Each structure stands twice: as structure tokens, then as C-alpha cells.
Image (cartoon, rainbow, N blue to C red; front, side, top):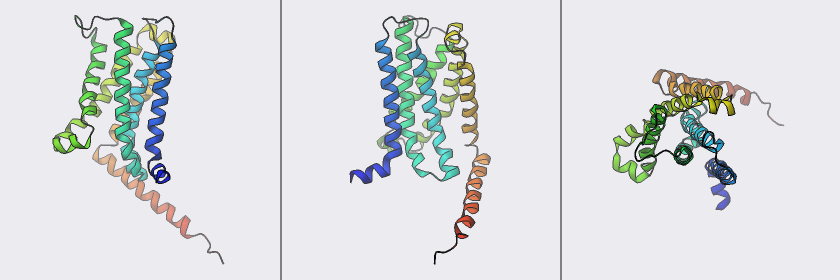
Length: 224
């Protein structure tokens, strides 16, 4: 039974184990830092990056199913989205602690932080309604709510790009703007893959790939 479960669910298990390892590493590094630097914290930046990365992984799963017919990818959307939310929460908490802002008197210090808060505000109800019970109870409203992931992706990446313009951050990670720019391009591609015209094109590509692979299999000589 256990072996069958592993064979059937190994992508899900691998994704969650990988995410746990990343989160544990970030937490360990955060605890291991003796003197917290309010101007720059690699754990704060790292948690923000991984929130974006897991959000992109979540959005990538549907095109993988559309192009390659990998149905298991659809099962990874939920855990990837939940990990994106978890890293976003960690990023927010580290930001509050590290910057030592008075979030009661001034909840949002600037417009860049406002974008991050809005992105987290969108991900929060999505994470809270990620159960089958919520899906049944909400009906068609569940899909409408979870389509906000597209807006959340754009807002979060915009937040990260604006924050990367900070000279202190750029001084420690000069490549961060390039990296985030690549994430933005990938995000646009993943969003374009959901447009009906492009989605039909991708489905047609999958069909053509299947046709090309069949002659190669049929042309193999039969063993005597």
C-alpha cells in the first residue's frame, strides 16, 4: 500500500519536501543571524523570492497539463499555491520585525509595501478556501475568487521590482532586478497561455507531438 501511494503521489511529496527544506533553511538562517540588519536581511529577500517562485510553479501546472498531458501537474497547483502563501506570510512577518515599523499607527509605510499587502490580502482568502468543503459551499464563486491569482501574481512581482530599486537591496544583490524581470516575463507567458486562442494553440501542439511520436513507435522492427 505504501509503495503504491509513493508511486502515485511522488510529485506531490517531492514538491512538499522541497518546500519544507527551503522553509527550514530560511528559518535556520534567520535564527543563526546574530545581529539583525534592519537595512538588509537575506532571509526577508529569500522568502519574498520563494513566494513568487511557488506562485509561478502554481501557474505553470495548467500549461504542463495542456501541452504534455501531464494530469498529475493539476494536483500540484494547490500545494504550490499554499506554499506561495506561506512564504508570503513569512516575508510579511520578517518585514514587520526587521523594519520595526509601528503597524498599528502606520499599517502601510509606503506604496511599495501597499502592493505587497494587497498581494497577501488576495492570497489569504484563496488559501483559506483551498479545501473541497469550501469549493462545494462557494460553487461558482470559488472559481471567480481563485482567478484572482493572476492579479496577485502581477501585484506581487510589481511589488518586488519596486522594492529591488532600493539602493541597499541592489547593493547586496545586484542581479535581483534581472532575476525579477525574468519572473515577470515568465508570468506574462503563463498568463498568455490561459487566453483561449493561445490555449487552443498549445492543445494543438500537444496533438501534433503525439502524431509525430506514433510513427517512430510503429516503425520499430518486430522481434523474431
